[in-house]
Image 1 (cartoon, rainbow, N blue to C red):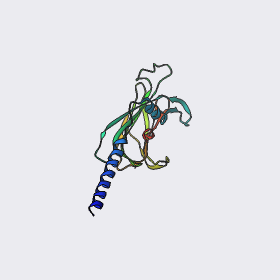
Image 2: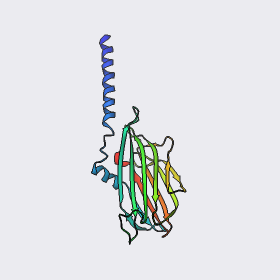
Image 3: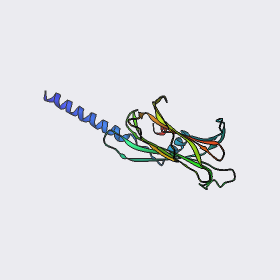
Image 4: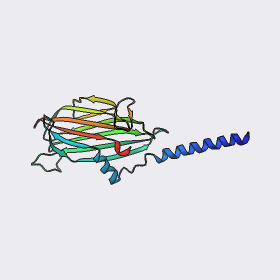
Length: 199
């Protein structure tokens, strides 16, 4: 009987150690790795479209990724993925942020071991230098491992920055889509991003 109890105790310890090791080995993404950031950019797109939805220009997108410290046991690491796309005028200096409109989109989530992660916040801005924007639209939500939508939200912010914190929005990956009308031209700047880089 003592041997059986000892065997069960050792088995429990081994399972516990393996679980801790599994958790420790998850979420070990190097957030400065150029390949990781390149993959993040591949998962995003930004365009300028006319009122009929025809693409006028494809915008370059930059990505940055931040990993926070481990949360409480079982909730994994928290990641923040930020994308930036800038629309520049034909006669402008591309390095001048006051030309055109700069759109940013940020997704923060808890990356939990397994396929069910937790969305913390989505946020973003439209920085408008010479132009102003209107008709702002934000869509965000969660998808499963096959890319099917599990949850979807739509908002219409009235300011040039926004932040939303959904309650209990879970999924394998998360997405954020923003759009705003550039008043000077009547065209729209659209930005789409998702978190599949870490899934």
